[in-house]
Image (tube, rainbow, N blue to C red; front, side, top):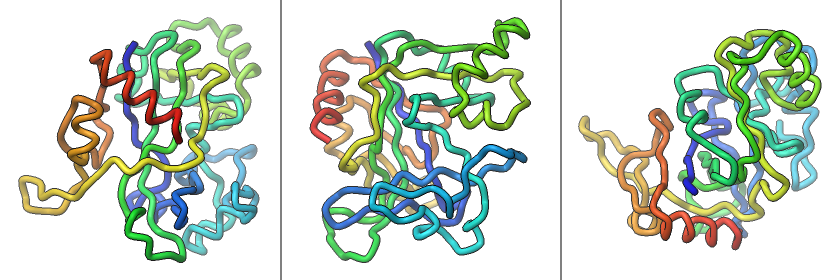
Amino acid sequence: MKALLLRVGIDKGSGGTYGPIFEDGTFEFVPIPETYRSCTATTYGERIGRKGKPLSTYVPPALMHVPMHDDPEFETCTYGDATAKRRYLLDLGEGDLLVFYAGLKPFNHDNAEYPEALYFVGYFTIDHVIDFNWLSASERAANRQRYPSNAHVKRGYAFENLVIVVGSSNSRLLNHAQLISQKQPDTSARPTYALSSEMEELLGISGFIQKSIPPRFVTQEHNVAQLVQLLDSS
């Protein structure tokens, strides 16, 4: 059993902001904007979050009517990618974990326990992984019908190189975000997000996690067990 850590969600480079974290550690997961034309994608103004407000509450006004690239989605638990990340997704098998982290910032509070930082926000326990490159036209069509909530399926095209990861029934969005980062200077002395010392010890890995290319794997059995315990408590 192994775990792959992957950064997702709106950020300052794609959407212009971070998702909100509240003073009790609860949060809203806010997807990035959709860059492809899509007639079925929900907009930020249409999606009501867990706090009962539209997600447009937490993003720049210009995104109010913009569709979201809802990936991952926690309705049927799918995540898709057709870029360089596909090869890492193909390393996952049944029972492995795909763990999502995102940038979050305080919303109407100054609780120092939840600063602007990177947090674990959810995970999939892998049921199966679909490589569209190996599917016939009829198999592609069948999987598009099977997973209509997936952001790439909603696009309606561009299925070359697409990999869709499907989570099992115990996959979920966390109730409370788990802080995983601290700021450290990079080689250019710019402050950059790295794993906190606590997370380095828990996960058995270290270094910068500002970007998720290449994604980071947690492979040691005791570290994966500690990660599972942390996620289960959230």
